[in-house]
Image (tube, rainbow, N blue to C red):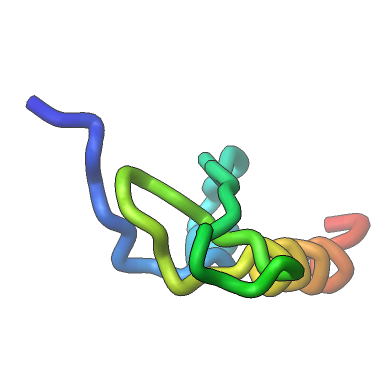
Length: 66
């Protein structure tokens, strides 16, 4: 059995479904831009940390006080 389980839902969909813990492992790609940090789970993804955190922030703003 492996802990590797790819997500079929994006971050907003996961939050809408009730997920309250996001496993965000962050790294800089050696060949990438110095400004970009990526989400990494055994391999580098195309997801940028800034975009992911913006998505979480937008979701939180829409759900304040609920």
